[in-house]
Image (cartoon, rainbow, N blue to C red):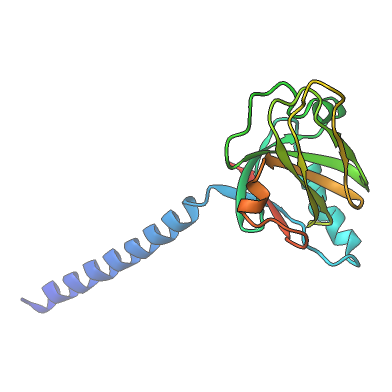
Length: 184
């Protein structure tokens, strides 16, 4: 090989390595399926930071899909933002698939109550305040009598409903933090 051939091979190899590096970076970043909306674990003294974080979450519309990660579990949840959607909830539905849920977002923290009117299946209710699990309650299927009512153990601003037993199976417990992503 001549000197110019060696130089051409070196140039080609450098170009090939550079192109490979660019492709790897592209595939790594393009592979991400979700965009983080809110990591809501913040110290209570950071109310201003929390409000900024939650602003984007509260802009989500009814029936938007989000990915919720809590206690090591991943849940694809429908957003219930309006009063009408929150009141309807899971009433009349046939069930929830494993890994599916419903996320209720409230404007302020209160000790909200949930009932099982016209619910055909049992669920776990995960109570969340300031980005942390403050309680988990089972809610049975509606038995045709008076609806069962459960109340949050403390003021909450987000509630996650998941299939019955999901919280126990995935070790969702008081103190777990929550991260919410926008599903793509």
